[in-house]
Image 1 (tube, helix red, strand yellow):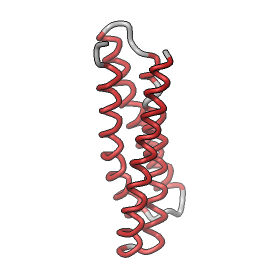
Image 2 (cartoon, rainbow, N blue to C red):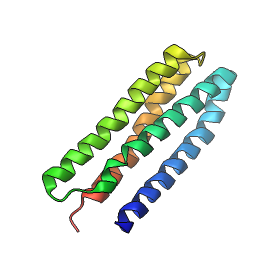
Image 3 (cartoon, one colour):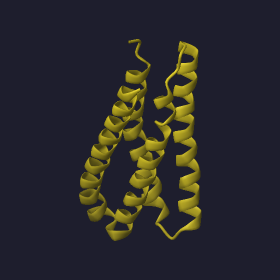
Image 4 (cartoon, one colour):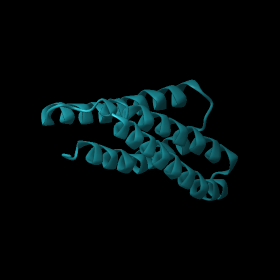
Length: 129
């Protein structure tokens, strides 16, 4: 059980590193192309995707006893991540004054970057020991 928590903490560290890299690169690009509004949209998108990816990884801590149970948990993990991202994006885009175009653009970029880390985490967690 401790190894599951350790691997989840490693996932959080990887997600934090990816978020930092995205923000550093994005700050330079978004600041030049879109100004302060694009930077604000980028921060909101990276934050939302980070939260969604972190919460989406929680079902995999439980672990499955059988391959079917493990597969169900992995699909549930990706479903939770997608649902949080979708409903969060709707709430931010429709309920706040965050600029929509940069927010949605960075949401797509961050979603796919964090998806790589999530799939890697799922593959490591579901590997037979």
